[in-house]
Length: 245
Image 1: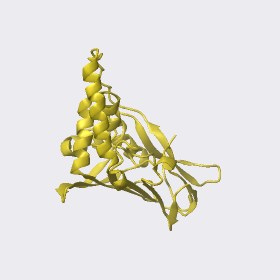
Image 2 (image 1 turned 135 degrees about the horizontal axis):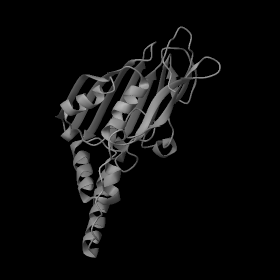
Image 3 (image 1 turned 45 degrees about the vertical axis):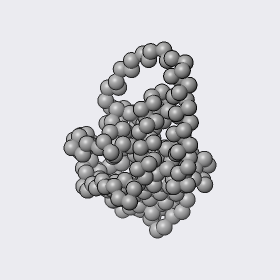
Image 4 (image 1 turned 30 degrees about the vertical axis):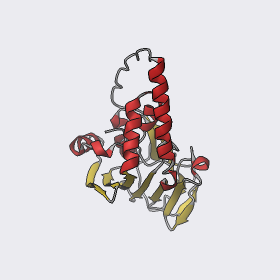
């Protein structure tokens, strides 16, 4: 399967493949461990269009690689890879109903860095992760960082010169497929909820409910939200969390 995106507030697939609905909930315990639940929903038409764009190759295929391919998901392989980081697959369902593929995945993790490395670097690609540090006031700081690949990258073969007619046909096909995606852009939504073990001091969340910070991205605010990452400061009172270096 293609690499999975881990819980970060970057626009997951941007406008190119934004016709998906994603909910990510991260619950952090007092010792820094916790659970991560992702619900991913996409129409079969959009899923097929993304696969066709991947097949065209080139820059468009690279953009589509940001979307997880749950039609080709190897549960055992995924479980083994995340297990190397101490992360466990607690629950998983993948079904197509009423024209949509819906995937629900729940993981348990020892700390946020382990979760980030498991969901990012272990798939041979880099991506956004989350880690916890401590500030001078004794509060904990949850912030994003760049996860580096931990597997050897595949050697890219030099592409053969492309025939002009073939190039024009690919360009026309890309435009057709892009039109299909844009017709579904209103479906795009992403919600991220992070529940902290301490009182929240400050955050850049769209809203806060108790100790839960919530970010929501949809077709209306997608461009403004691009590049924004979760950042939360929360009280360290009564907590003992191993912080990142």
